[in-house]
Amino acid sequence: MNQTDLLQLLANGENSRVDFKRDNQLQPVKIAAVLAGMLNLEGGQVLLGVEDDGTISGLTRSSSKAEEWIMQVARDHLAPSVIPTWEVIQYEDGVVVGVVTVPPNAPDKPYKCKQGAHWVTKTRVGTITRDATREEEQRLYQQSGNLHYGIKPVLGTGIADLDTRRLEDYFMRIRGDAETPRPGSEPWRRLLCNLELAVETNDETYATVDGMLLFGQNSGRFLPQCGIRAVCFEGAEPTYATKSDESIKGPLVALFSAGGELIETGVVERALDFVRRNTGTSAVLQEGRRVSRPDFPETALREVIVNALAHRDYSITGADVLLSIFDDRIQVQSPGSLPNTISIESMREGARYARNQVMMSIMRDYGYVEGLGMGIRRQVIPAMAQHNDTAPDFTEAEFSFTVRLWK
Image (tube, rainbow, N blue to C red; front, side, top):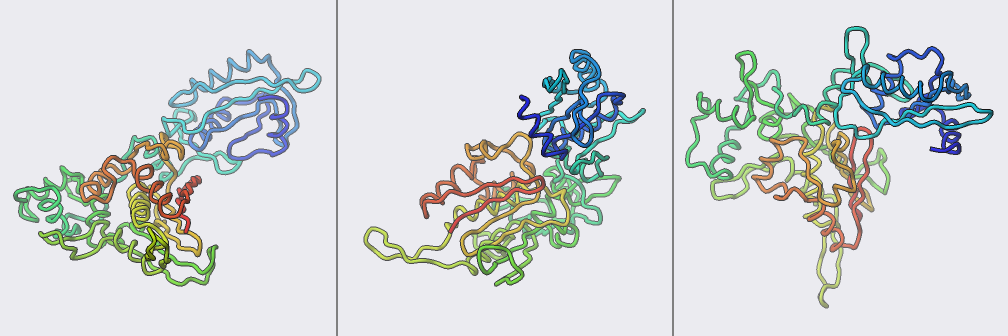
């Protein structure tokens, strides 16, 4: 960072990634709280020697002593401890500003700061650093891979809330088991627990989140965030005037007969059917013949919809996957940002990740998920290029991830 960069930060003011702190009498717990909040969000910078209004007051100690103090705070007052980057920027008349930087995508979330005898998880909301809620802390554990939300029990449910027909179809037809235990028996309960579709807690057996999402008979009652909100708009922007609006709830997987014939659709098939009903076809010349072509290739659509369902953050309640159809595009927005280890660029290159591991494994068994886990690279991008020579757009926000396919 140079003086020009510093002046730009000062002009923009404090935000979720920039904080101003006076050096004089700054308590370790205050700067540790800010650093923990930034580490739990997208990283950031603390400008040491700057007043709240952006006025530069400068360091009141030598830069070497200030650096030593910052490193001590980061080691003793943050858990896990970190080593931030320290820079010194010379301003006018020998005034010095210290810049403390912590990186984005820190791998060991949640980061906590020491408050008295306790360690407290912090988060940043704009310019405010505050204690994280239970739900926010839970999402941070999930982002770091230390918590798998899908294997949590869904209170109020039991094994009877899982669709026996779909489970038997999965065991017999998909897995190829020669026989399965009698539904409702103790071996049946153990099988579901071993597959993490059910879990025993305090001498009670509950369906897990993944179990209800995949095979639940009334999943919308227990997990309101279980499905897709599908909307077809008039024009190229969201408005109140919609052509079609549907809430798609139910088990993610379809039900088939022993011969492989479709008996009941799942959420994936119903979402694809919604797209077919609300998009059209166009006539194109192919090797001198006039053929009808859908507005969007189903290969890409299917992969994007399945990815949104399989990779979304189900700890974010009250938010469905949002499937939106516009005149010029389809976009699919899933709750939750990308996991720490994944960026948009690495995803384009075929990086693999699984936020919901049990769900991914079972959907791969059904053939919903690309076997090598590189569906974006091997399916979506090539399908769109071949279909109409366009590239999908990927956008990450703080609590969502959006894919756009262009008509």
